[in-house]
Length: 252
Ligand code: PGA
Image (cartoon, rainbow, N blue to C red; front, side, top):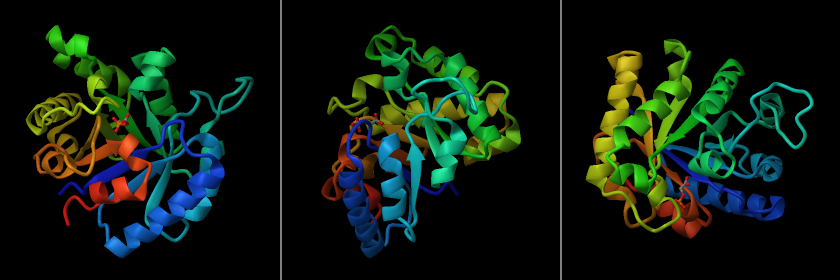
């Protein structure tokens, strides 16, 4: 049984004070609603400490949206994994399409960070997904395949329990266009088959695959009903309790 895993990627939104107030409100709402899925929120780095404090005692996991590929040293402006862990961060999102496209992150670079996060005993949400151009050119499977094979290169089978994959078609992120549940499910099934080939069927069957790209209150239920969709990585709709709670309670 794969336990639903729903995450909120705040991107570059929420100051520490706003983030703390919102996270406290969210923790209260989640408790009152009896949300039973695994819940994660990923604030910007500087907002993390206030949010960790605000969700203390709740079942909300706090993640980072990125981290550096080194443990320490002369990397001006960067953040190392042990700095995050020291704050109570257990999880890191890696390979988000915005990092790939705006900051030129390659599969090889993302793989370095995946391996470092695993070595640091952190959980990883590895984002993959094709652009519209790639989809229209019939490259969906080859793009996903290399993002997964290269992104998870040299990851050991026993480390895979710390990995979640988020399928986020780039054309669906922040655009209001969602993949149909059928299209998303097919991509997820393909991702599972790639992981099966790399590792084994047990690991593929247990892998949590989130869908991301304009997930909201009105489409969450239909997406989550699909066999291969085990969760959601939510951007815009994770920024208010009013919008995020209905996604978290998709099964209520
Ligand atoms: P969105 O973002 O829900 O605003 O489309 C999703 C994401 O980029 O993780």
